[in-house]
Image (cartoon, rainbow, N blue to C red; front, side, top):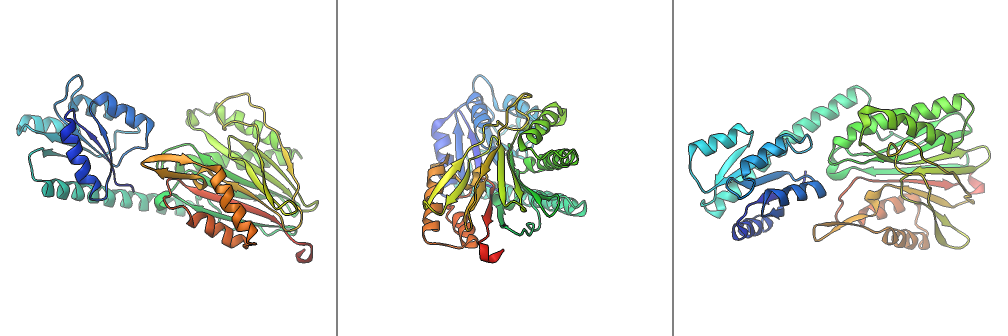
Amino acid sequence: MNKTILLVDDDLFQLKLYEKLLQNNGYSCRIALSVDEAESILLNNEIPDLIISDYEMPDKNGFEFRKRLLKNDLLKNVPFLFLTSVNDEHFIQQGLDLKAIDYMAKDIPPARILSKINNLMLAVREHYERSLSEVKGIAEKLNLRNIPKKAPVLKNFTISYFNQSYQYQPGGDFIDFIQINDRYTFVILGDVMGKKWGAWFFSFSFLSYIRSAIRLCVFDETFSLPIILHKLNRVIYADEFLNDIFSTLSLVLIDDEEATVCYSGAGDLPVIKYDATARSLVTHQSTGILLGFSEKVFYDDINIDLAAGEEMYLISDGMIDFEIDGEKKSDMNLFKEKLSALKERNEPTENIVNDLFNKHTSQIDDCSIIIIKRKNDEHQ
């Protein structure tokens, strides 16, 4: 879990005092001078771990703010703490009746403020970890997973992969390998668009659809990636359960008999190939948009020629994301510079995976990478 707190108060001086106190003790803070400003922050940023709001504010007060949050499925369970300068039992009870976890008087000493918030965050964390443990236990009993235990063994290619969920909580990235027979293997990398670990549940639905679509097409002797993606997208778009839930997808078909690789994608990052002859990186970008975003979408396929010893890389956006001054940034060029430097040093595949991830000084999303390497002739 993060330690992110949204502070809401129409008194800027009070806000700054709380912000400085909390930031000096390891918390990340966002501040809002009104309910409207707070709602704008909640709409455009990651959901905080705690909301602290004043009772009395002009226009919309803290009670109205809390009522509005309770009507929002994404925000109603965010722990909420009321601030008050009025020691009135009626006000306090009214706040607690709105499922606020507690209240806090503005005039208490800073040490007590910090102690109270620390204790609340600790209780929230312990509850969260118990819930997460229970969910993981159920998933394991049902044999549900969105990351495979191992990659298939092929004659002409090796497949390596790595996944690190954000802060070790279940994430929206999913990876799968579908080995149809000794000749054909599908490689899947996707990312469900969602916050926190709620996206994890939807990743199972997307994976189920993808597996079914691939196998149904294969039964009809159809191995065309654009056709598979087209059918898959139509079904997902029509599913009311997945309304407003979208996913990126990189789909690769390996023909181990002909030693060929074909790629198609939906709203994903470009696939990167290392060209050993030119000693440079080449990117391939599919034209398809996110799965489920529109009913009628055109998908293309790209044949990627991998010579002996060459590699291609499929990545999720967490591999290129980082945070500066509290803002999320993405830089594909920086990622490519790191990858190029590693290839120039002839680093082995396992070192590339480790070095690329370890250089993330501040992971802010799930990180996934799949490396497909054409074996050298002597290893075949």
